[in-house]
Image (tube, rainbow, N blue to C red; front, side, top):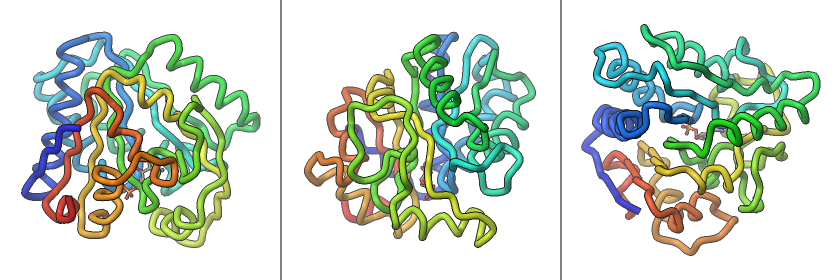
Length: 240
Ligand code: GLP
């Protein structure tokens, strides 16, 4: 793991965006994946800025979303799909060749899971997987206790995630499951960029980076990734 400590959220966002852009410069036909949540907002905006300024050409690259709340579609407030469509795809003046956004509200969620696997199998492996870290150490919806061998899967949300999720959609909905790329797909990525900001992430980030590799803290698996960057602001990196 290469640790990159940034002075603040803006620097973290720019650094992560530039690492993602480098992957496209290395392989114009790259497959990229970014997370949902609060952490990546600045990063996806910075990435879109690079694209719009002509500093990276994504016209041959593809994008796949990381995860979604089961029951939520890309029009639902707080969904990862809406985040992807508005904060990333909608800002791009020159779009990706193609983008696959998980539909958590699909009637046949098993078919949706298979479609995610098929998309990554066809265009992957991921050239770059940017990830956030949950308060329980989850990556995407690879919750604590997850099987590291899984590809795309549907998984019950942990109690910690259920508590935290009210920040995205209040009491309006109560998802019980997540659909997510699996650790096997994340670990097969040519580059992984884990981003974290804020003092509330300091403990879990330290467990992931310095603690034992265990599925109790899924992000700890990244210690075994050959090309992983941890990009954190000073507050999140305080206990490293
Ligand atoms: C969410 C998402 C993850 C995200 C993580 C951290 O529930 N499923 O993809 O990385 O939890 O979210 P945040 O950035 O809001 O702290």
